[in-house]
Image 1 (tube, rainbow, N blue to C red):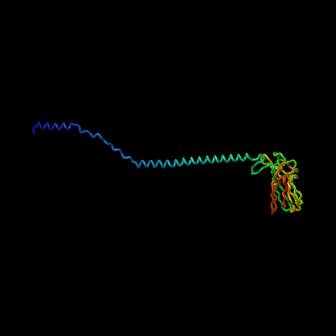
Image 2 (image 1 turned 45 degrees about the vertical axis):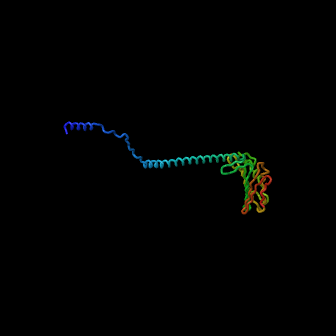
Image 3 (image 1 turned 180 degrees about the horizontal axis):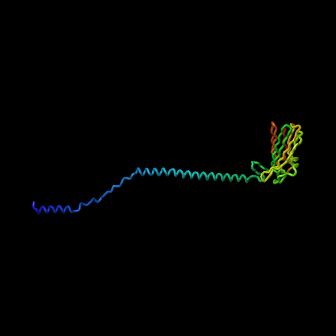
Length: 230
């Protein structure tokens, strides 16, 4: 091989070494890291666990508000009902503290016999005795102790009598207490309420008579004034 040929071969190799490398492939794929699905699922589960109690609290609070509103409506309804009942009372009927009833026209009579001693108590609104409801003292008690009841039979003599006013709020009741000694107590026939004739305000009397072994009760009116005992 000649020296010229060798130089030519070396030159060719040098020239080849200086040429650019073959073009890089056009499609270069970049690997995407895999999505960690398990971690995402875990986070979602934790979020649901935190949100669930919060939703329960909101629902419970809403339910409580509904119950409170229902109770308030119920109480308002009851209050309205009570007001309606109060307004429907008769003007002459007055309820006072202690559950006492003050009813114009209606009186109570209670009599009891113990041996030969007969005790009679009568109570009713001052209006029943034709008196002003605002009075608190009686100047003369005789019209009330003498004109309210009489004992029929029994040979009874009155031994004590009193009449007084018992205030009930802005109104008042007449209270009459009478005591008799009856020589023939077993022969008492009736207690006659003369108050129907004496006082225009008497309309009804709830009367009861008690002994150690018996009880008699009746509602008396202007057409039936006697509580018969036999």
